[in-house]
Amino acid sequence: MAAGTAFIDETAPIRIIVLGATGSIGQSLADLIARSPERFDVVALVANRNAKALAEMARTLKASSAVLADASCYGDLAGHLEGTGIAVSAGNAAVLEAVEHEADLVVGAIVGAAGLAPTMAAIRPGRRIALANKECLVCAGDLFMEKIRRTGAELLPVDSEHNAIFQVFESEKADQVEKVILTASGGPFRTFSRAEMAGVTPQQALKHPNWDMGARVTIDSATMMNKGFEVIEASHLFPVNHDQLGVLVHPQSAVHGLVQYRDGSLLAQLGSPDMRTPIAHCLAYPRRMAAPVKRLDLAELGTLTFEAPDPVRFPALQLAIDAMKTAGGAPAVLNAADEVAVEAFLTGKTRFPDISSAIEAVLERMAGEGRLGTCEGIEEVLALDGEARLKTREWIGSRH
Image (cartoon, helix red, strand yellow):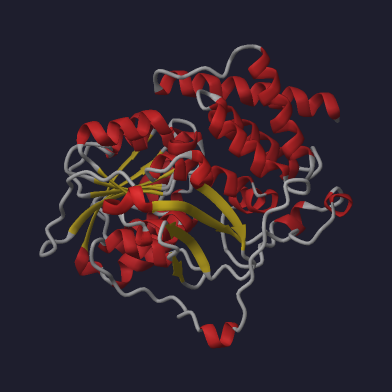
């Protein structure tokens, strides 16, 4: 895990900017801040277009400013916050301006490729970046990590699996690590056959057995693409090679990550499946803060089981691993194609197995066109993202 030299004065309130405030991560984070308001100074809350939810959160957390990415929603937000003294702005430029404010910690939780530019802009000397946006590392991992190293900013992983590994990965002994293992619940279709999965509905796929997450992440968990994304992220976060990264299916979602050392020790982080635990770890790091999560009772749980992922029933995981090894623009294409294919499934335009099929077809097409080379900047990443989205829509349209 690459970390810089950012230090936060533990005697003063932590100045915090939240990108993606009204999403599931932002809501969990707001719950923690509201329970310890004296520990935080909320500089800015940024969301996409939910003016009412953002205004309510800004009032509760006594934020200095509230920003919406959708400029057309400015009037609604201003109306909700009239008379509060909370500064209001909207539009993409306003989002980028928000990260210019003085802050100790920036939480990057904007969902999708829309989070790339503002999270990259937030990286600067002396700051901590608590990262929950997958696209920063999946689509632009080399660019993102290079800026982290160059500025000396400090990166903390919010995602439960990466945060778990961060807690048990002894950085000073990285050369003694044999394997890093991410766990996966297996989703709602862990025991389904391929034939059964062909007929599943969005409503079935959205019923995750353990976690409460946004729609796209929940569908990605059902296909196991989410775990593939996490493997790609781990390849950037931790100093290990691709062959040292592994996945285990663990239906109970109690063990979130493991690190195997060369002496045979296997260190694991356990906890209830509640995102407030890893978020609290990032908010208080290197100390700990109270989190109102259910304590894991191993006696009550009784049994922990593990199994290898099935690449035949869940081909998305292998597609992600192959994209990681191909590198260049392959992970960005993988992510863009997945986002479009998941949306098509949720809106009834394609079947569940077609999500992986669409991604594979687009990767093969763009590889054949020589479009998976290295991207030199965020603009190239976003251009490739747009091209992959278009080709995915074309593939889905040609099939249905």
